Length: 198
Image (cartoon, one colour):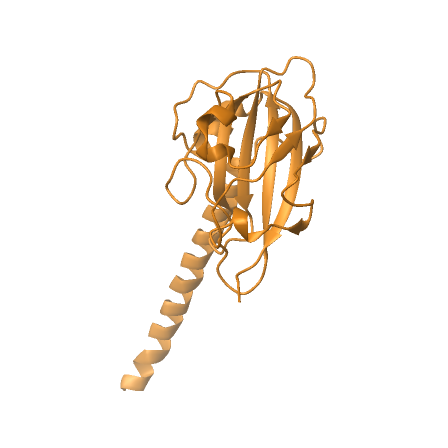
């Protein structure tokens, strides 16, 4: 008699598990979409390079949680006419719970071409920019620190905006992308890889 009841209970438990997983997946997808400022390929491109690592190359430990957590050097090409500021977002799209934010900064001057190594920890190097809150729940740069045993991709995006964002230090990525949406003139991307140290 007891065995007869286990069948329906297991089915109900399985259905509930499927529902929970589906809701979590939808929430993650929605969160990822909410962070997108523009659709890929719909606006002019900015060129972003770094002397710290090559595009699609390995990020040295110095710029990660295994080293000094130093923000890398970035060079940005000239934005289109009408640009008033730049915004920077660094994310790990391979994180287990969805894209993980490592660095957000906004109101960088549109004239900025070089962001030196370690700028996040040196406010004067940011040329008046404001840094937001990352997913480590800290303001500023938090370097790659991937779980698991495979390298993760770290996407550095720079947006040229036609406005100055009226947001405070410690603003979240949702607040920043919400304020920037509809004001992007150009976008650039640089990708670095980093895996757990063995």
